[in-house]
Length: 153
Image (cartoon, rainbow, N blue to C red):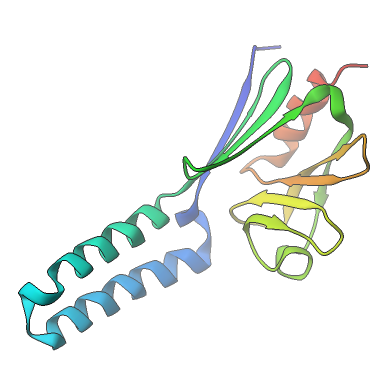
């Protein structure tokens, strides 16, 4: 067993984002050209383009170390889960739109949490307090296995 396991996904892997972000960029360019006054809107255009491009490349990184699960989204949001608090972990199919209203950093109606970028399966971690945490990855089976191998017995 290696020291840590890392799973990384980017927002552009989500099919919806792959359509919406380019359309937004095109819309911004059209609005910028239509206004005709380049000096008045230049900074708004540049900042908007930078924001949209940053959102397009927003990473979700999940690292499983010997003692914790570290979840990072877009260099801003983070959560650390102590492996000592993990009761079970399993790979499970779920409905992101129905259960969480979509993908990303989400809270479900039942209080469960989701940290996902795309897809309909996750490594679901159940904590001592009964809370469930849904972790998305390209290979959720490998993520669930990495967590399970490190959970103290």
